[in-house]
Amino acid sequence: MALKFKSKDRQVRMIFGEGEHLSGMDHIKENPGKVFAVIGPFDKHTDKQDLQNVLKTVCRGYNVEPF
Image (cartoon, rainbow, N blue to C red; front, top):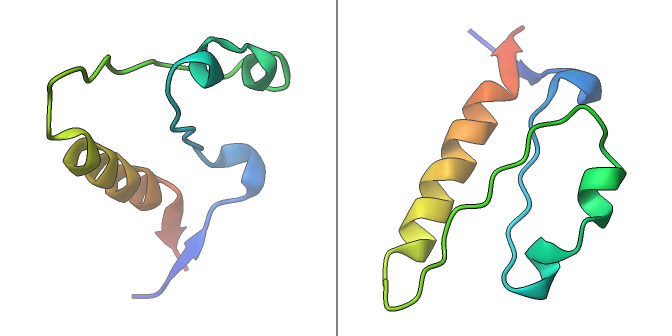
């Protein structure tokens, strides 16, 4: 079975950032009706990259469908 990406309006997008980047609201204002979540802070935690990698994998899986 082949896979293709869903249309742009049906895809999920992630934004990774820290500090002021997340507190700046431009990305939320530019995407009305979308859901945003902030995960963290990651102070003194060493698994931040592992979590980002898993979230990317889940997002990619959601954004494809059978062709």
